[in-house]
Length: 82
Image (cartoon, rainbow, N blue to C red; front, side, top):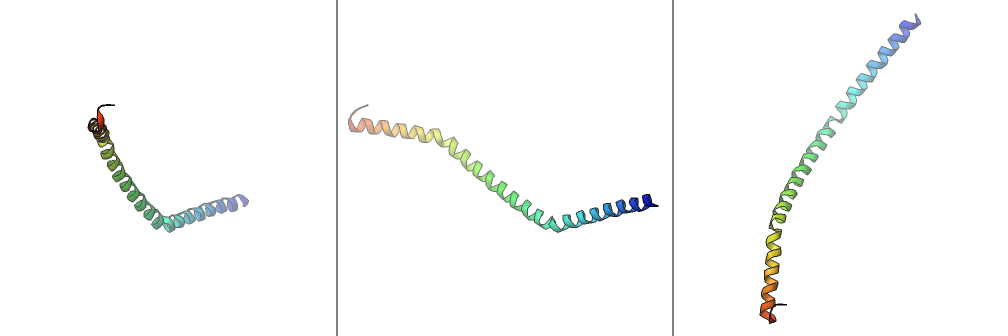
């Protein structure tokens, strides 16, 4: 008799836990969706920043070369090399 009561109590606890879990999942689902949209937006912004940095880093040798060339030109104009 006690084993039947114990068994029924265990089943009822498991069912209550499962229902509570389902309720919790349903309660936080809108929050999860909002956070997913937010994460997607941040990933899109990050990708845009990466592309902007990639373009800038590809142009870096041009900027350095231009600076060296401008410095040499000024050196010649202002009195010879070095």
